[in-house]
Amino acid sequence: MRLGIGFLKGTYTGSISVLDQLRPERLTLHVTGGGTLGSVVASGTVRFVDTGGGATYVLYDGEAEVSGRVTLVGERVIEATATRLFGRFFDCVGSHVEPAR
Image 1 (cartoon, rainbow, N blue to C red):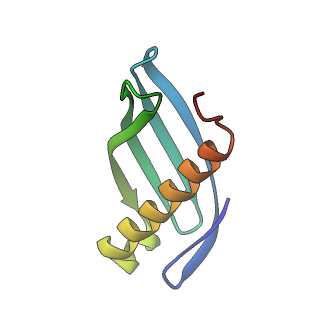
Image 2: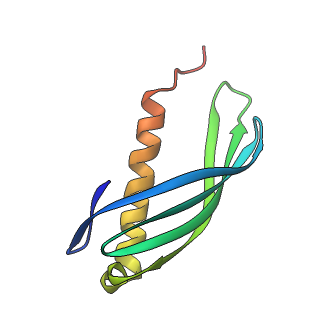
Image 3: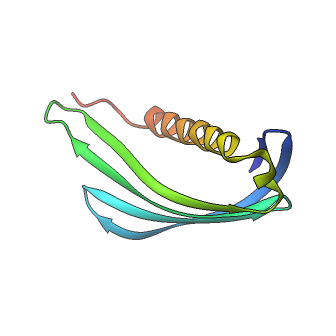
């Protein structure tokens, strides 16, 4: 993935592993990645909550450890970038899910 974080831009590679899965309620993910500007190790839980009205909430929580030159931009910029990436991810997932009928 090619990504810009603040004034730093670079190419990153990584992997996502599913560590724990309890269908249809939750799954735990482990993420590793890096590039010339730094690396990240993260883990998190994604939960699926049935609202009973035909909709499902997707909730996520996790922690990440970022290292390397990318940390020069500061925590706020990294958090804003992570939030933007999560938004893009969930928009993509949403475009592939059909609404309940």
